[in-house]
Image (cartoon, rainbow, N blue to C red; front, top):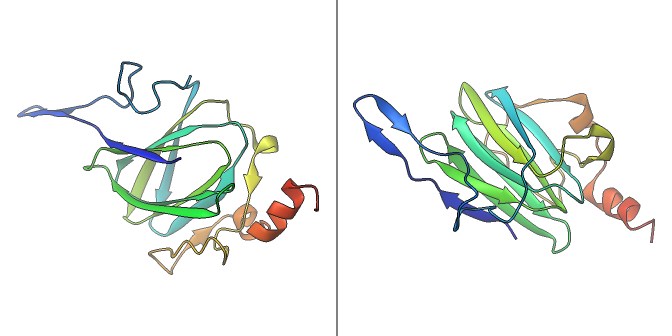
Length: 166
């Protein structure tokens, strides 16, 4: 199940300090071994995804700008959608067997991911960025999308392939 939390920060005349993650009691994802950090920098309108795999937990946080994050629970056919901003300090924990995508809503945004398994393009699933079943309801219609995400299969085709064509 998707989990969210808002980080506590310390703010004074010098600026702000806050943790991105801790393995202490009560922290989101404290039970998960996170092994890799990744940053995704995008410009306004860029959509990345839908991607996922059967192993990887992803702890996501917008560290610059704002973005719309959409996740799809493959097992329960449920969509989750969040608008997260750098000033909200909101983290979203996405489990394995979920697809996720995001769209940059500001001139530029940076999404920080912490992953429980190293990134592997070969082991990653891709589903069309605007799949009608997922119905992501992207906030901006003027979008920039990679060929990989434009050419990805529908959710229906992906699920047929995942379950061996049955």
